[in-house]
Image 1 (cartoon, rainbow, N blue to C red):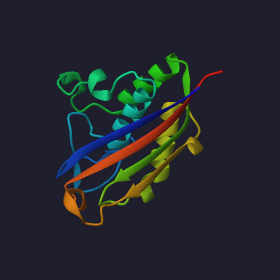
Image 2: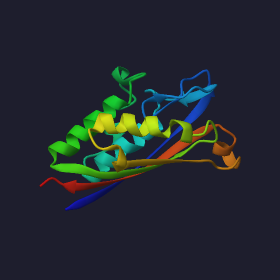
Image 3: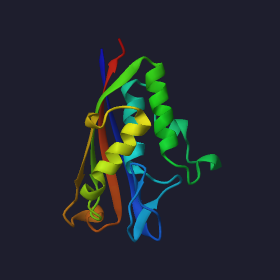
Image 4: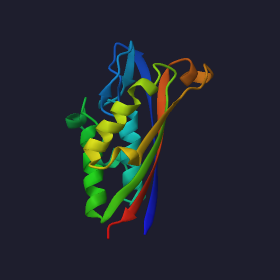
Length: 159
């Protein structure tokens, strides 16, 4: 049996904040405004994993109203979602993500993000792919005011 999950996340960008995507620090003058570290890829991926098995979402498990998640490393959320998926009897077939960010470009960091994600989830790197896209200077995202991520996950029941 296969299950599909879709995840989405968005955060505003602000000067002086840290930019972390896929657990990788990316040097830039702007970073995410968020309760945790704001890692849009890990947040969207966490939601996709949880949604695929009908478990809930990141806001239910790690509410931004709880101080213990303030400035939290989002790999914590991803590890827990992966544990829940495995406990439910499923395993990851593949992950496909789109990171929409005007700048900096994602491609120079893509392999590090994929490798880090694969290590956290204990899967092969070739089970993950991400693409960087822009809004080509259109709208709020195109003006560099925010970034978003969309992720699709395919799971299969463990044999």
